[in-house]
Image (cartoon, rainbow, N blue to C red; front, side, top):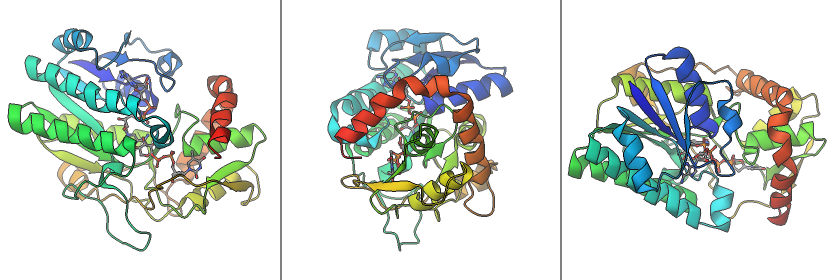
Length: 334
Ligand code: NAD
Ligand code: TDX
């Protein structure tokens, strides 16, 4: 089975490739990745997987690669909300034009396609709203990032209905784990503390993200590839929608041997989504998926301990970017 993985040098994509190589030798993987600031060749170090450096919006390149594949798993995206508030264009280009380009190629070649998307397409919930997002929730994105991901989801559905492409989609909540870019919340705090800087909480930190370990997300994608129904969408979430950012930052401080309050409040994100919560009943009942990274307090203790250990042991991976990332955040008041 020849598998093309777009965005396979980014955080979730490279964890997916690493896990697939280890556990699913029947797949022969090729990665297509532009190596933007978020992509890193080192994420695939030690793996015998060809990396094609290029843009998913390059129709000729994509056509040739899709022609050679039996299945495409599409992770490539511009993925950071804060960046989308500064300059939305790369999000339009990659998330919309790039996804369109892939869809046209899989349409021409009759290739199986899986589209990786996010909970953010549904907008947010009020803190006191007990509802959870499911496969029927109406789309209501807040930021240029989530609007372009929402657009890409609509393109996939339209290509399924109008052209009969063989595709599935998944919408997952916030991931954490090794190889996550240090611009993102959890690795930013871990690497701040490892650098002797305070952890930085946006606003009051009452926002809730339904955190999931990246391996649990990627296992769900494999189940969907194995047993998912073509044309369907699956919600992926690990039931951590009771934990807010303040609790996560306090847990990181505690696990790293500091007082629980060893962080500072910084400027809030404009239009900050309050609460995400995922109802993954369909994935659990139809495909039998269960997250492995769970525990009975925050649901994240073991996963965070392993993630902190990974950043401690892999300082050479993140250190070269740290100063620039923090300088960019300082400029934005975060
Ligand atoms: P990331 O930013 O770490 O990685 C994205 C990768 O895509 C990078 O390697 C980058 O170089 C590559 N890329 C960007 N533009 C490209 C282009 N035009 N052509 C080819 N490659 C390009 O992102 P991530 O956190 O790994 O997210 C992967 C996917 O999962 C995205 O589609 C994202 O929307 C989705 N998602 C992420 C999360 C999360 O919490 N991180 C949660 C749910 C869904
Ligand atoms: O330093 C910080 N302090 C802070 O309090 C940063 C970087 C973030 N935050 C807050 C903002 C959010 O409420 O933490 C929360 C998580 O922030 P991000 O890591 O930027 O993630 P988020 O905006 O929630 O989006 C993530 O989850 C959904 C991914 O980046 C997306 O790609 C995914 O689709």
